[in-house]
Length: 406
Image 1: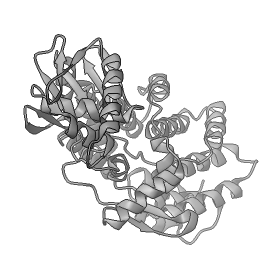
Image 2: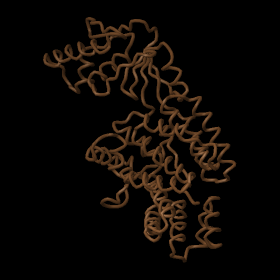
Image 3: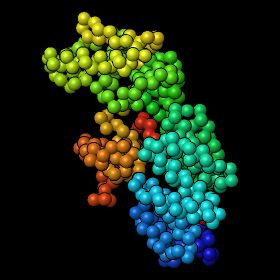
């Protein structure tokens, strides 16, 4: 490796993409193409970065399997940053195996981290946590130690373990300081800021107030009867009843919970659960059926008593009943939560992350675009959706790691 390539690689490792480009911008050999691709990725031109890295991998060919594998790992990192969640994971697995076979454990670890962050984005938390626990960060350089800690924090946030998340972020800050990479330090600072944003709203006794993630964790560990509109579950201590696939039943329990300890009239329940302007006998008959189903689902937690006007909740043990709502009530709040990370998403990536069809994701995006809540650029397969981060809205703590440069 000549002196210019070495100097460019060191510049990239220090977070200086412009310095790297000054040394290799006019060169088209394989090593220069790879470094130029990583530099363009750090500068935010992901489309150009992807093309350069692909050309570099092709130029290295089969005679230099390690260098080609590094290009594949970098390309996977670019795909993750550009939210191409459908990028073939088999290519990343093959590149990681090649790197491990040739003793390049640092870049192999980077490949594993990319895979784990993708799993977190598409909601496969158990698999991500298992693979993350298998990595020992001790022998890794400071930059990857920071990435490891950031992922630890992301998993802890999703598990509602705020102490673990804050401790991991403190480790990430220390590692980023030693790595001396400004962009990485900024990611850690941003993560700390997200932990201090409202994660939910507490609705009880006709009043509401915002809750931080620590407050949500404390609430769910208390003896309170919690109707969780973020996850669509009803919970009291360790007893959790999911109504995620029963939207009508969850709407009924939420309306009853917001009014507790008062009752709710049948007309209001019909209007909220069935979206009917006027309640007739068919609606009242259906309401009786749905209330019966709700009683059966929640029989271990609460009764639902009939009153002259309607129905009222009667928790078996709890003296406190709370509705836990999203910080921002929006029909397509899940889409906005993903877009609020500041990255550009394709509709196919959103569909994969939300476990829904691409057509459903596209309809949600179109509805948000009409109201000016999201923006789009590009056409066809290159079309991407984005939005500025919403003030006061906590997003997922999945943070971009630096590309491998060794």
